Image 1 (tube, rainbow, N blue to C red):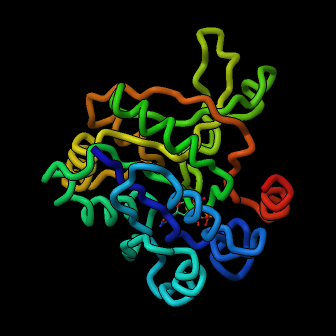
Image 2: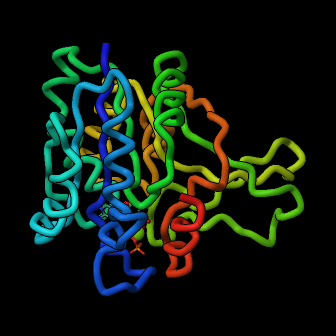
Length: 240
Ligand code: CTP
Ligand code: MG
């Protein structure tokens, strides 16, 4: 059964401070969003694509992405005030397909991570089929323990830094996107969150709270960076 991919682009990019949403910034002849979308469209065995955009930015986004679509159909949906709310908008668009059994896994990706590779998507999709959920994790080094406190509750975005101690509290990993989950479990968890009025900074956080789902870590690297601060744009250009 095929998967669905959700691209989250409905933030404002306030920390980059570019005056426009960071996902519309130029990158390698396209835009940050253009890179993310082109890669997402190249992932095999994906039946549905949902692009979540900021209300009022539909025109700019269309200009950036229409030339990249080819034969693909991408549903565009207006996002919410928070990343979680934007995810919920996308899941409601996919709900009928999830309940009808047309898609078995949903992958959620921050469009602000333009360098995520198709292989990483596929690896998390396969691991989600096997385990229930899968998140990419990249080592941040071993000597940085308490100096780099987790930024949970920050301005949002899938866990910028997560401490998933290995028992000795030494292993710091950055949790990234794309994150993939069995579609029925993801939808169920977000329904409970909506009913309870609870929000989570990252998709896996919601599943950990409301789903009985094992979440596997898929190895990634720091090259899958999230454009968060001004200097990240040049870094993405250099790495991409
Ligand atoms: N996002 C979203 N809807 C929101 C907030 C964020 O779809 N209401 C998306 C962003 O577009 C981004 C991803 O979630 O691709 C990760 O969020 P983050 O890096 O925090 O982006 P912004 O919220 O746009 O940036 P900032 O926090 O600096 O304002
Ligand atoms: Mg944010």
